[in-house]
Length: 112
Image 1 (cartoon, helix red, strand yellow):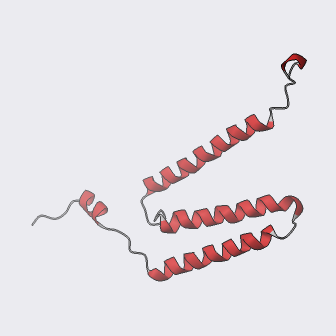
Image 2: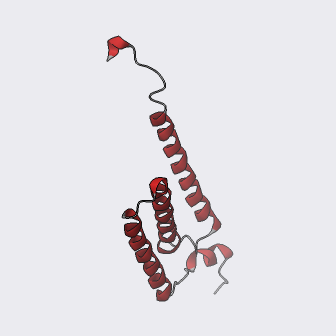
Image 3: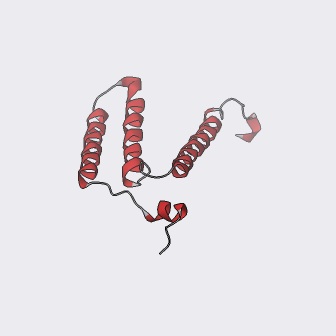
């Protein structure tokens, strides 16, 4: 038998994650979900939205890293994940810039 090439070695092995890691991530997600519910009942004034978004981003990051196995993937997978997140941020930014600037131009009286 011949020795497997580097290409065969890199695609044939998979990282096996211990169950306790999954349970720890699940526990963290449940704690963050409970925190989200608790924060929803507290009036933080202008901080409600940033706190809720920070918790949501943390939960999404945990899901992406562990349940989608991005943490144990190669560099190209991480590049594609970051590119996807940046594209999402750009699309949300373009949408918000359109929505926030709609009142800047007045509509002529006859068009109302």
